[in-house]
Image (cartoon, rainbow, N blue to C red; front, side):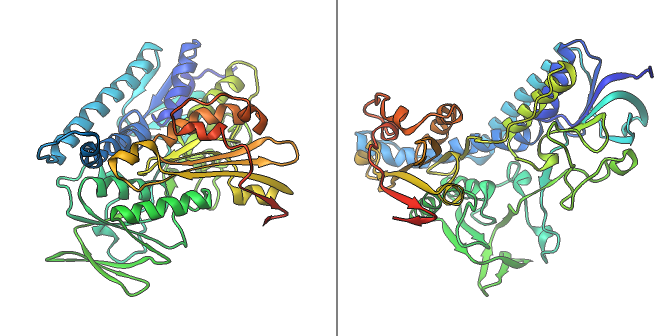
Length: 461
């Protein structure tokens, strides 16, 4: 039997990599992990966590306005961007410390350096030039924003990474993209008082979400004052004395302080030594893995965004736990990527689990669609016209609920809870037999007794 320095070596200190390393080490394995930037990865350091903190901050402008309807008189308010950044940085540093502490307590060896493969069992630590060997290697290097280098003037633009560290809050911003990141940051900057424009090449924002929610959010954002330009793209960005001069395909001219590109993410596979080790990648640069997250090299696995399967933090953590079961517990376990609850922390939020109406109509001969649109109770006194939308998609043949979609406050929290019964295969009858909690917005989910409409063979009837 060959002798290795480590039973397991993990390249990448994000959510998936840290979970795999920590749990393996707690099982008594000799584990090393290397990260070139900060432990916690995209989610903790420059993604979900700081973004959610920014979302909370941006909501206060509306909270102050709404207070009057409930009898409160709120004095003059002001916002300090630098204080928000300082508070955010403090919290992120605390969380990174917890990630390191977890690894340390499990007795994993922590390396603050970039690591690259030399061959199937050898890793080079670039800071020292040291090489180490491992019986099993996990690559969990995540992804990075697409910088869209073909765009003239891309060097004057920022990505979501830089948005968390701007020295000053811009007075105006143009955000390119129509996915999670673009939509969430458009709402964040608008809520903080920035004149905000979103530009997207598609017909409607959030392309993989339910059509009703996409339209509902679009309308809500425009009503707030966010300008949305669909069917258009940026063709050039120039730096001028007045800011950034932007031209678009539809011949629009805009001048803004900041341009942010949120045009997808690219797997971090460049210069990792994958070719030297024999690890295959696809045309998009993602590592190719089998159903158990094993790469083309039997002892090398890959987890999370670097595989470009589902780019969500809980998915990377789930894949790490499946890796542990498969490799160290003699229990081959495939990651389950079906029925993943997810949320868009826009304002209002989107929470969803399961199939959209459009996708379900392609898969099932007949659907029952239950849909409610209403003004939430809080809005009656605040005076807001914002609407909530709730939809349940039901397979008519067996009455299983195969999709749930919500637009409105706390939709993300509801999506997490809805994920349980839908994953368990509950039927619409189970929902109907569940007592409502009154008065709540979510009681609509168990009080929609008659279908709003049916879909047969792809056609609404």
